[in-house]
Image 1: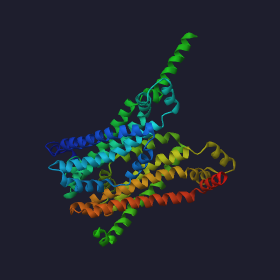
Image 2: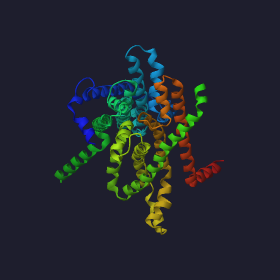
Image 3: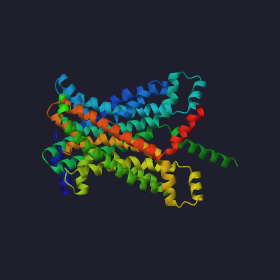
Length: 242
Length: 220
């Protein structure tokens, strides 16, 4: 335990290209890039599936089946098949990012289509009754109502990506996983446990940030907060009236 | 695929080890989650801290959790116990919420009838509440089983042999066959786990089948 603390607090480990801040930055950008690409693919696709109800069977089964495939094997296979076909450093980065994206898509897709699907039919009908077109119903009613589930899909995708980005070190990339893999290679327990603490801390921080973001993006009309405020106001009004 | 034919014995041995490392935590996790779920049903205020606390543990990436286990348990890094305990933590984290929600979903009227029939709380829990919660708990267990099988393979990196060892073997030798064999074997194992849980659930919930049979007869 003390060795781990010593490793974590050693100033030499906090500088340079292989220091903790540099590895943390690598880890964050691998993850952020993969999450952004996955969201750009999965959210529109999920909205389409949820809005039209088409391809639902495929979406449900795909998201379920993907949980069973081990990410480590997928990563190695992707690297060995695609790596030699891509020139230079991208030969490692592209196959790895591809797997991170592939792993992030199912949770976002599932969150998005089930979010749109569970929108109250009455709300949808009301929107149509008000003369909204399909795209308007989607943008003004379905998306805001689906936001809690879209956000929670993004949240679990982010955790999945941060966890899998740790494995990027096994194929020679950077990221916080470097400390775990290098420590294992030379049997330096302090280094691998120190790295593991950092990875766990990053995952917890990402989860915390995602849960705060979840609160921000969800319309107050869905959380019941405005309702409470309205009833409070109404109560105040009735009180002043009487 | 000649490689697969020549190494069926190795693959089988890895698969047995894999089933053990993924299956034992599933049983242990269920045995821990049921009393925890019962507690959070009995004392409502426990629900949020229990679900949030185990949820936090679930966010820790598997490789990090495997490596941190020796710090907590005082074991050696190569000890398979690290993997068993870490996987049990994940299983409990997934199941506590499921069990608590499943028990909450048992209708109050059913519990009241059981009480009126003279069942004491313990007996009522095991003969009425828990059996009625089985379908929901089983759904949670299926998710945990499939993700356990997939996560265990990461333990190959810390040198605990199982199907994941085929990935590291293949990768270090630049040889795709073992990796493909490992992927297929992992998915098959996950399917077998899923099938076993579905079958056990069917055995434990005969009333669901008789209902379905009756519904079938009336429509026929």
